[in-house]
Length: 392
Image 1 (cartoon, rainbow, N blue to C red):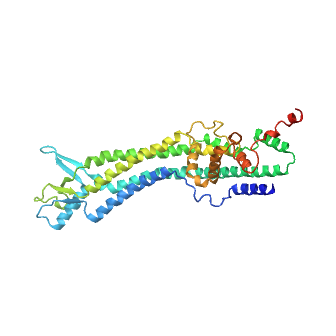
Image 2 (cartoon, rainbow, N blue to C red):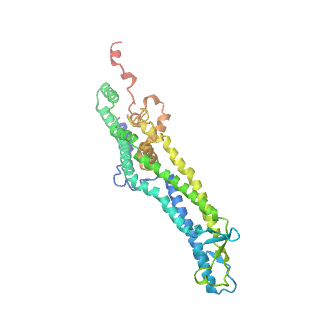
Image 3 (tube, rainbow, N blue to C red):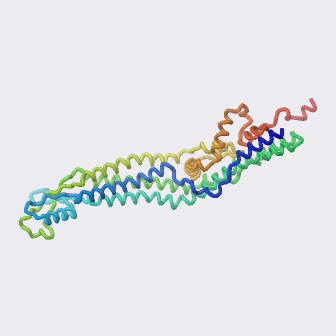
């Protein structure tokens, strides 16, 4: 029996989790994977398109090409191009003596509008970084630490039970004390459960998360309005009539009132506009999906931790309306599942629990580990009702 007890002690000691106090913050993810994708796409795509617009401007030279009169010198032609690009106004005859003007400024403002869009889309990220991340990181560190400690306490409890069973000369006393401890809930984890219940009544994290995604939807709608109102108005206009009777040429009689100019950068303008619409159209369903995740509980993680003794956050129906901080924390616990070493151990025990032949006697990790250690998970039948055995 001593060899079996030694093997059981080694098995239980191997099941204990190592203490990782030093490197807790290094791998902690404080953004959900989908939120990170939305951040990189919504902020990075305008910057990429802006670099494309600047590259086209630097490589092709002037973004417009004006058809100057044939008697103009090279310097006069360059001046015409510069003057028409500075004004960027299309003159159109609306009547016999009426001149209708239409500004084409979105072509000139294209790179700067993309930069402004990138900064605007980064504001929700800054909001989350400064308003939610400090509290969220402390919550995750505490909960992850407590969940791992709760698992370790369960294993140490089985070790203690094994030692008591070895030293106990009367098996009745051992099982009576064990059943009494279970009934009086000695194996509770009140600090962890009460902290999670407290987070269920808190709404600061969920409010910040809702505000972040709502701002993204608002800024995306503003982008659609900007592109639809300003870009669409000049989207198909490749040529425009420019007035050059200004400055040095204002008094020249041989200079025509209007000359035709062609926008050489119109293809880049169209690519940028269509790409922006396509990118943010794809992002909208992702943002809406992020919001809908707050409307339902992710109970997979908590269902695994029901294996801890007296950890019944689910069975006691403590999970009410899902729009609270606890649901947000559960989402981030799923994202940081690699930091929860106890989760993998408990997941394996849950699978083994479903395959064992004594399902009705195994409710917690303590019950399962006592069975692996060579003890019955409940009082054996030959030890029940000893008085009946003595007085048949």
